[in-house]
Length: 280
Image (cartoon, rainbow, N blue to C red; front, top):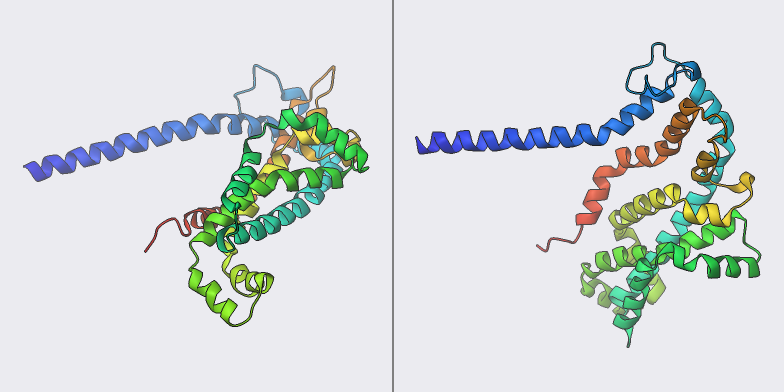
């Protein structure tokens, strides 16, 4: 009887858990439903009364207009995100390697200063950032925005790689030193081939952060021709009439690359985060 009672309790707890998860999933998917339903409606069908209803006839008019208006800015986002992600990941890998395997006097203090960069609010550095980029003639350009994201991404990428490399046995490094390899040759021939899980985590993290970032983009790139898609999407709203189907379609297009990255590499992201977290 006790065993049967325990099984019933376990089943009831599992059902309750699933109910909570389903309610939570529905709650978070409601905005996605409104976004998708509105983007598939024609402009004449979009209004507050029909906000929750499905489109009477599926129309791709919103997607066509959004693609026409946001296409160049989509390309700008790609030109921004790819180099900024690669550079910040590579620099974070080098930093993490040195902090983890080449300890030097003051390393812990310097590492703490590097990590401090993660907690500096974007808003507090906008004025000096604009002045600095103006002096080096990068203000208003995509390279200036790339430089900003690379510098701001170094703390988090350094932290991820440092924690990952700490779990790699020091005997590997010592054996390589005995064989005559130096700092960068050890990184290239030993650490780098073992870094795939950490790189996956960093690339996903940085790619989504840079792609979705708005404040730096709207501050640094004033010219619409070089603005990324997040800024262009905000500018898509007209001052008199807002074409909500175009807005929603544009939002879906802007969200598509990060969504695809998470769908394709999500399981590797979790594996990379857990790599080295559990000691054998």
